[in-house]
Amino acid sequence: MTDGNVILVGVDGSPESLAAVDWAVARAACQGWRVHILCAYSLPSFTTASLDGGYAALDDSAVRAGAQAVIDEAVERVKKSGVAVTSSLETGDPAGVLVDLSEEAALAVVGTRGGGGFADRLLGTVSSALPAHSHCPAVVVPQRTEGAEFTPVRRIVVGVDGSAPKIGRASCRERV
Image (cartoon, rainbow, N blue to C red; front, top):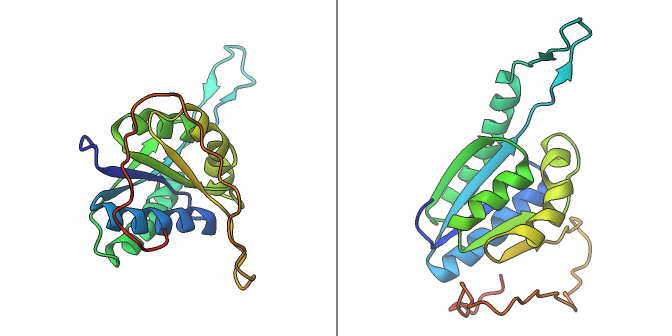
């Protein structure tokens, strides 16, 4: 992910994260950038009841396979658009992994919140932590209820720290 013209998208398989993928693809198409899909997970460790006070490690093969399926679904979604896509599966705290990788991205994107499974691990805290700690601009794509009437966004909060912008004006007139 060393090229600066990349949009980093955190996914967990939830509808909210797939909406973030769609938003990122539309933005990448406008800018001529590529998309990098990331799924990160961590396994809990438990202290054992033994006298040595050691930790019990869990076999992560099932969790890893599930996370890979989430990435595969998101990558297929991007490939249909024609936008260049790369992906990675990382172990570690999802918010921390995304913040670390945001150093190499022009934009980081996640959905608003999770709804179970990987969603609770990724988007519950990430949608709060990423904008606060990201090394690049971050977008949290709002949740939409399917079939609900479209309500235009009336307010957008933008944090400014005085540094030079990394993203120029959109060269695309399409609504992203």
